[in-house]
Length: 336
Image 1 (spheres, helix red, strand yellow):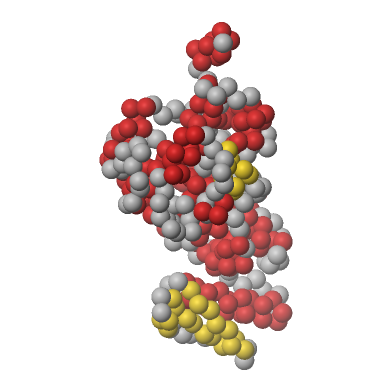
Image 2 (spheres, rainbow, N blue to C red; image 1 turned 90 degrees about the horizontal axis):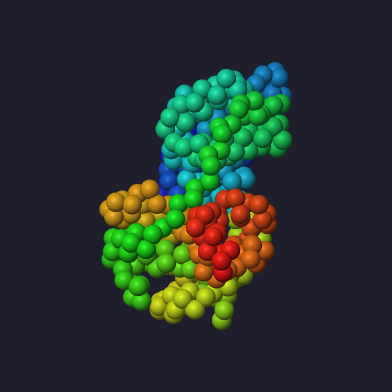
């Protein structure tokens, strides 16, 4: 069966196919996504027919499984943005493995991929990718019953790197603000201003980038911000210092969301401008480490209270990952 050509409808694309006398249709962002959906549906129909007639395992490409996983599972996950971001570079990332049948992929293939990938990106990135694609194959095992075993379970994971303990100096803060054309106390009006404002707000609240970008105006209260859903799945109330309240008072637009920018545009602006400032090694997440260290050094917050602010369920993770005082800081606390 030939795949019909998708039709453009407004900003999206529409495709309709006929399988065993039944019509199926889908609307997607791009023509390629429509064609991928149609190919997947026709492949499933052929696979089911062959399985019934001959008990033969149909060629089922890894990339087809991943698209189906995104459509049926990934799109509904809290981390759906990350899963969707993997669709575009999938074939480039996996090369020949992308078109290989999932029935033929072995731990040996995946080990070779892991080794190659570790030469391209850091261990944390590879660990996150392994977790995602292992979930994709688990879906094929437990939900689609296409496989008996998950080959990702047969490979050794890279050693997780030590947690970063990068602090952000005052002069680096000023360099970043200058690169973003922003001055403290300024009302943000341009996209780069909002990135700078969010950077300062993160330093004051220890909130993650995604949490700040997700704040809606209705969730901002007199002395706290309510986060309905956070990384660990629970809601959290983040207390606001006087400086945090001063920053919030600078936001003067009438939109529903605190930061009127999508995550991708925000991320690109941040990456480009910090490189321009010569501070490419700084990550936005370093603001969380910096803020937590300041909470202990300046506000003297005990760790059990600090965990309520940051949302950590495990005190050990909070202490070992985010709070890394210098020995001089500890000596000052002892004297105090």
